[in-house]
Length: 229
Image (cartoon, rainbow, N blue to C red; front, side):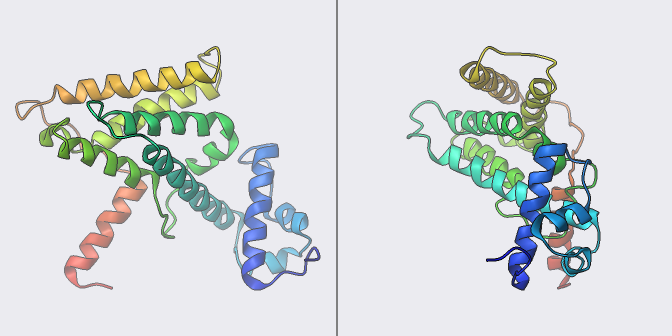
């Protein structure tokens, strides 16, 4: 297809592709909607039919990146063999995959989790948070994590894994190679899970963490229970 000769839906995807390329080249902030339009050979006015502003394009790109990450994490967990006695290995695979993604695409990762970049109303499926939730629920079902330790456990795991990924991406800590990165991610995940397994009904009540995604889910559930469409 000639540059600039796009059908309606194809132009939207082409603009997202161009924006992602610009992010990889210049970072999350170093480009404009006009530049993305120029990359695909259309006028800014044509782009405005799909994205009313650069922020709108960023939100849409963030959603697409997060959905792709969700698929990647889900796939990493699904590739693990029968757990046998090691029910943690699926979550370890998720941690490894997350850290590798953040190191392979640091600028895209920063955009996806940038301020305001995850509050889009567009459904993200599979959402990385939901993938993590599902694996922690598996551990509860397998008797490897107490029901009392489950609330908010996803935020504890995410904080640890994201922290490692950020420290590595920013060069604040270094490891020899990809194998070492995988091993360190495994250690972090297993250490967090070891701590969570120590929690009992008698443990103190921890703060209730929230994210844009969990607040969005809560709103939908409230709307459903009240009959709001």
